[in-house]
Image (tube, rainbow, N blue to C red; front, side, top):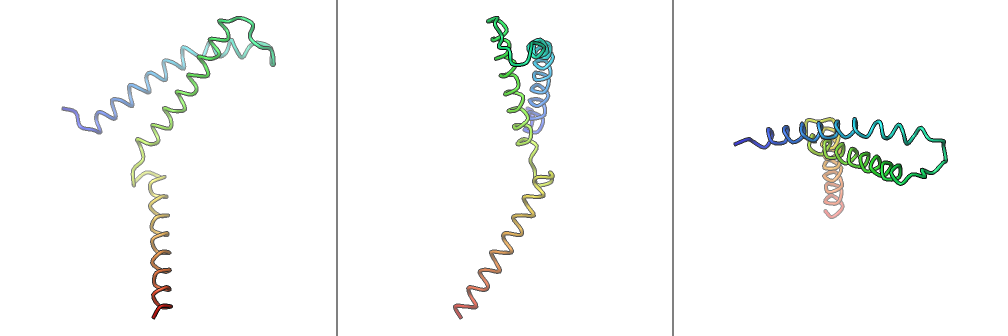
Amino acid sequence: MMDKSTQTDAQMASLTTSISNLEVQMGQISQVLNFRQKGALPSNPVAIILKNLVEEKDKKAKEFQDNTVAVNFTPQSKIGKMLMAKCRTLFEETEEIETRLMKEDA
């Protein structure tokens, strides 16, 4: 039975491969669509479909990147360390406010 980390790594590898394959397949189509004259709308229905596919691929790639960041978030990661430092600061500020309020009540 695979542990969660191994499953996540396998899933990430699979998703990375899928995204790479999509990028290769859609790259040439994207070049063809971008080759047309600027501002000109594609007149061919196939070109419109291909343009929509490229946009969908870009959206999926962005979602994949967002998911990758979420999966890789740990207290030891750069963002994790920044958030932990901010939490400590907020906790210290809260304690200071609490101490002041207790002194005022006394």
